[in-house]
Image (tube, rainbow, N blue to C red; front, side, top):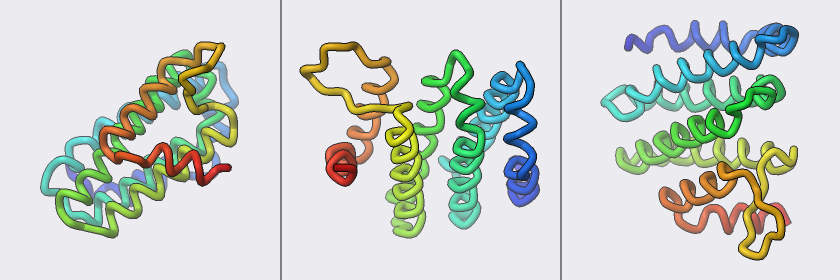
Length: 165
């Protein structure tokens, strides 16, 4: 895809009125999901191709900002866990691209963005840590989140949980 449109996408999707428009109607979660799915779909190809790293760095902030600005609306969708895992996979691909291309800036930006996303989800009690001795059964996507992160960034989850204490 032609990523010269990224600044326009950013301007449109991150406009201050978008979250209130999506939150207002009963179909808001559906539209928020549709936009997020399309955004992730469009950006997944470039992150794994030879797209210039400057463009990839811009994409990191676009996805995370859209997700966070529309978090309350996205949470109302039945498939919120799947939406989060889709964003998580893209963030991990951003980190991997930075690592593979030895671009410390992209790797750091994507890692810090992931840390911020996780921080918001954990502090909002949307996402939790999964303990082996838990009496209750947490949502499956919680465990998938930490397992996925551990595969790409060994030790990150443990360091992250310690940073919150």
